[in-house]
Image (cartoon, rainbow, N blue to C red; front, side, top):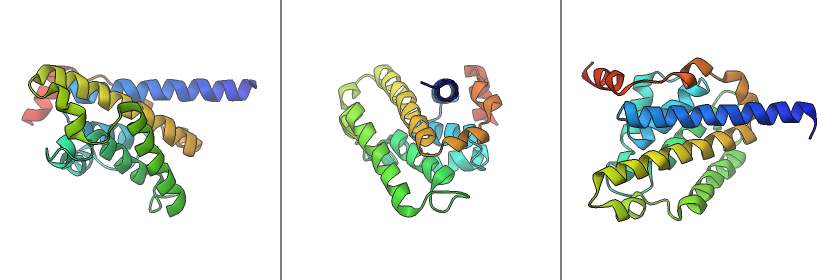
Length: 184
């Protein structure tokens, strides 16, 4: 491996880890659902241009598999929304429709390969009677989906590194901060 490609790989690994940690922090300490957490971390992490409130508003309807209907997992939906925002055909410097659709399908397929389903209802069914276990599962699912999304985004558009908002990604909100934000 050339020195430049080692640096690039190391940089991408660092970014992916920051995205992972921030997604977990958003989900667990800000009490955001999976779709809100994914859209927020991708939007702010890669300078997508939405305000925090706009990202939360857009992501809110996908919690629990589209309003708790149990359909497509909210984490997957949040990732795909983030893809559209950052590299979609209507984004500045975005991909053409065919390439973007292939990227969205690849995200879907990798998610399915990792979790064996894309359906929220199926994914959380083993935790139906145990809210704490379900919350831990969904936190992990959110984190792992953030990793998949960051990997795919950086593979598809390596120049996204230039948009990186490291100050946002390294921020750690406490549970108290999350509680106070909910009151505001």
